Amino acid sequence: MTLLLIYIALLATIWALTAWLSTRIRSRDGMAARKTVTFGDESAIRPSRVASVASVAVVFLIWAAFTGSSWTFIHAPADWQMRPIWLPPPENVWFRLLDIAANGYRNFTLWEHLSISIWRVFTGFFFGALIGIPLGFAMGLNSFLRGWFDPIVEFMRPVPPLALIPLVIIWYGIDEKAKIILLFLAALWIMAIAARSGVAGVKLSKVHAAYSLGASKWQLLRHVIMPNALPDIFTGARVAMGVCWGTVVAAELVAAEKGAGFTIMVASRFMQTDIVLMGIILIGVIGYSIDVAMRMLERWLVPWKGRG
Amino acid sequence: MRLRRLTATTAAALMLSGTAALAVDEITVAYFLEWPTPNQFAQAEELYDEALGVRVNWRAFETGVQMSAAMAGGAVQIAFSQGVPPFVVASSAGLDIELVGVAVTYDDNDNCVVHESEGITAENALELEGKRVAVPLGTAAHYGMLRQMEHFGVDTTTMSIVDLSPADGAAAISRGDVAMACGWGGGLRRMLDYGNVLLTGAEKRALGIRIFDVVSVESNFAAENPELVARFLRVTDDMNSRFATDREAMLPVIADAAGMDMDGTVATIDGFGFPLIEEQLGAEWMGGGLQEFIKTVADFFVAQGTIDSALDSYEGVVNISYMEAAADM
Image (cartoon, rainbow over all chains, first blue to last red; front, side):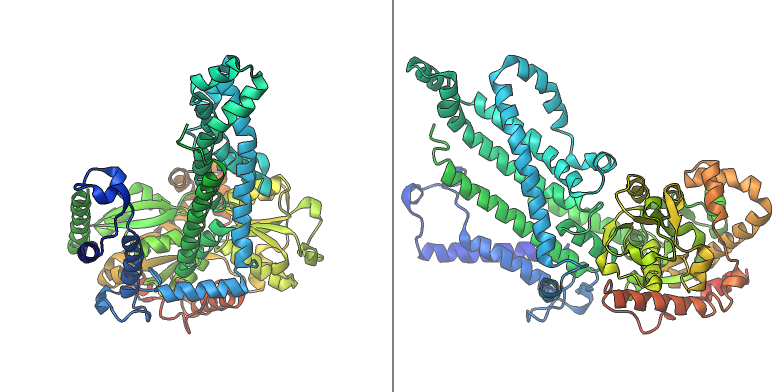
């Protein structure tokens, strides 16, 4: 409760400070600079870099202050201090990261734990896209196939992949195959629906224009439908990647011998809160990096997005 | 939005401080399902509520680790039949919990099973190196497995150890996915359909591998309400001694409370031992043997690298005063 008040106080102070500073340095450019009122105008809102950096710094500061960290000279009063078993100070997590990076955890190095998780995500996603995209195209282009697959896709889509874990273990055992199948199922429906809505989004005028210029069905698919569906497919891919990453961490809680989720699970069994926190931070960082990479890939591969 | 969150947090904080300020009029006890013990007769018939004079809520848990966390968070005051490894891990990490009694011993009800196709027995146990093993990590079964492998000289770092609950471990060994699976209770009985054990319960005991569950309490609660803890142990003991004579009448109630059928209950409970108060206060248990054994487990975990450090002595986390008080009741 007090923590929330402190947080809001810090937010307000830094906000006021940056607002005061920015009146001195006019940094807005382009259209936004010429607008007199921007409140309620979403297009004029840019994330403030200063705010982002300060936000992360504040979280760390509060974390350090309440755990008696030696990294900060600001400390909460003694009876407010968290015990390391609940929340270890940031330096413990950092030294633990260095330790595990050097010596490994439960017979595997940190890199092996992380790379197996990443490998599972990419393999599952790859097969999901490989089947899902053609499936979505088929559903977007043919009445019979749409009718045939529609109930299956719409039924399977809202089923959380985690609910399938018990079945997957019984059917496919505990090998890599089982985990990949789970991730495949997580990605498949998302990719199928993204591809279908991509096909649905192609402007009819473009299709007619291509036909009137004498395009064959294949040429239409290759040169009109595919490029115009790509932006939607990329959006689907970003969502699917996020879901897969969340699923792999949870899938590793069951029947794993290595992986990012496994690390957290086992550490919690032995009350090693610093490893749990380290795992959570690494999972967050990797998930965020995957999303950033997908956005960059999208900008590079589909420059025509939003300009159709 | 921010305002709403603020009010919600305030309300939650008020509720928390409210419960803390009230005198104890109910307690929550953590227990396991499918783990039949005579005191579940008292649980079902609400004999605890009568003897303690407060409402006793029973909350089923999945693992002993979660019991520790719930006790530390103040949601649970007493954990009945927490495994030794979770207790050792939590007390070594500095959690305020105390061991006040032994709930159940089960050397024969917690073991490792090797798949029959492997043809591995105590004679050629070294062949287990490099194989895949299913173990519920951080449990008594995990400890038992590591100690057995140590006895046979098997290097466990060569094994691929998969974290599976006993039920999932049984499924894995039935599919032949793993060479060995470890567990307890119903999962262990299903595993035995597909293979053989390396050591019997008696052989493990001879090696100093003791398997038992404890009664643990949140230290502050116990210090403030010693009477309640002692009475809890008293009722438990009454049920244990009554079970020896009145077994047939109690079994159906116990089976119901444990969520099992009669056959499973009988098979499981026959593999259990329930030491009575006099025995528990003797040298083998809380007279000193228990404290020493817990220290052995903690040191073993430190040597294995699973926990960072052990306490110098575990006499401080084993509190026999409640059991002594229960003996005089």
